[in-house]
Length: 447
Image (tube, rainbow, N blue to C red; front, side, top):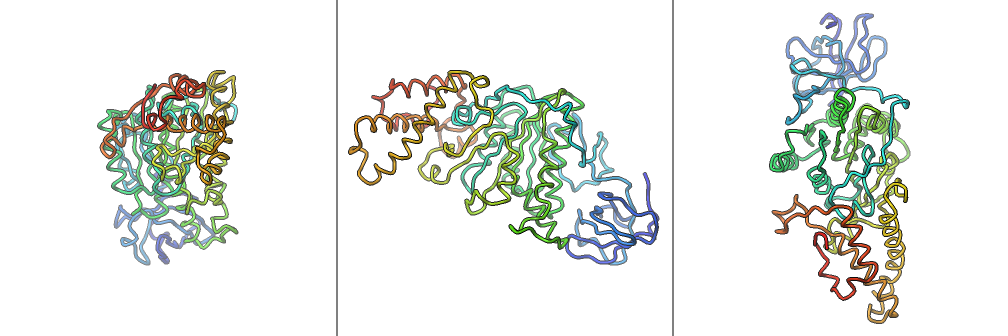
């Protein structure tokens, strides 16, 4: 391992999470190279930018351990994360020294696979969640965004998907800016569901500095890539929360005093997101299906940071606060949620026709809801009342009790196969349940 002489690298100044390091040698450290101190091996800095005689470094360890004039040495490597079977059933953070792991390691900075080996799939990945499987189905190897404001159930829905998918796959969960409580609850659910042994959890809590939180996502992607490329397996990749990844990059940009864009985000926003998303692809060796929560600040879905992330998604599942306030869970916004792979040749004629008819009725339902709120449902013409009530029955039917929330709601979770969901929706749309009160279809399984 290459090491620079300790007298050649010294901390010149410390500004929060940034350390300016003087380089009194022609042996300039490279970008992303790690530096440490022989006095204290807990010290870990990463070279972010450099010019002759000086290097700006991100502090990845406790800034309290640093002082002006501290001599440093180079580890001659970039930040690495352990990979392989040994990380399954483990919780990983970036606080450990990259030289302390006995398992194989890999740099978190990898290039995306070449387009010649990238492969798309038309296989539907059933989640057992009626609303998702019917309205915005997830395809193996695709990118899925769970979009919504605070408190609408993004993390709950993501956890439910993680527990529900019944496939012989490895799972990698990246907690970016996660609350400690949320991380603990996730671990308990994974252990209870007996899927933890096939799952790796990579956490960077809210208490970590921005540089660490940003790199947690890249570390998790590196582990997923290993299982895809070396083990040639299918991988489920979960990231909570992608907006916090954007925020972490923005904080680092602000610390480095980079000029902000017009929307006050980092100038390289799109590049930072693509450095992660372009690696989450499927190849001829294996697939990575990524499901990412995307926080919407102040429920403003037009936020530039949110839109930048959504532009990479194949399926967008928007969670509505208005729907959540009506007590309908999962609170999908059926008007904004979509999947780009919805066509007859992929999802099948039955599913396509039922979904198309439901979407047509939704437009009428929206119009009729506005009218009925003024004059009352009973004053609508008879045919409009039929449309209104059938659509309402489908909306109610697409609610579902979750395994994840059994303790909170007192309702046992259910898993419904896609073929049953399509069949049930067709029955409702054909009027087979016109004599059933709408509220009877709330939080049921298959009919």
